[in-house]
Image 1 (cartoon, rainbow, N blue to C red):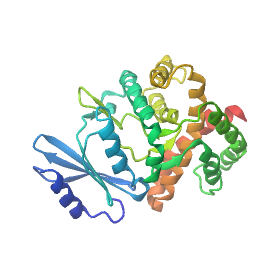
Image 2: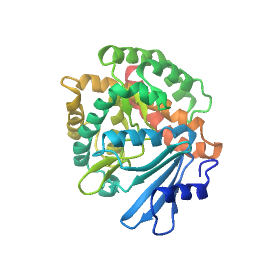
Image 3: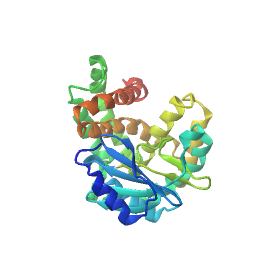
Length: 307
């Protein structure tokens, strides 16, 4: 459970917003959030208490839900201090159906339209704490990662990352020159963040969001289609999904997408480091098991080909 979380106060806050018909139960506890399930007469609602590193999530979710009610979970109540969020049930995660790529073919254009619409609100989102991973900030953030002595990698792997730093700055400069666009970037867009209620697909869990290059969102989506669904990196599905996602952005962006996802794969390491720094030591040890996977994936997909 997150530090300082007062479950009695949370239950009182929930009851001021809805009328539970049974016991409010703890569904999941993580270092960055605590989730409670709230039984209602017509189904259930979900309460989320966010840690400081994700304190922007209730406000971000509420603002996105107000503008995009057909693709973001419905918000029943929210508070920025404490960082509490109460949402309606959104159905089942697409993980329950096996994460079919056909679902992403429907979802990604809707998500891209949301991103296009949020471009003009970048400064607003940054102003209340959404993390800044805009292109210009990335080389410095990457340098901060490289200064760490405790990355969950072998020394030769860390050396390869460090040698890559000048090349990463060049890639960032190229992206800034050809497509200097920033928007909300979910950064955890996978089969347990996309929900289906039988008629509507909705996105949940915006706590990893940054303001960054929007195309980087698909780094996580594609990773899980490979790792969970067993798709080869050259599977035609990836091109179909890329093209469906890019359609709201305009024509001729396939090359930019490739560049942006390479930069985004490294930017994601910086985002993970931010969460790791905020964790207790015991939670960070467990976190490092997944952190090592994304570090090595970046080594294989971005660093190694250009050294």
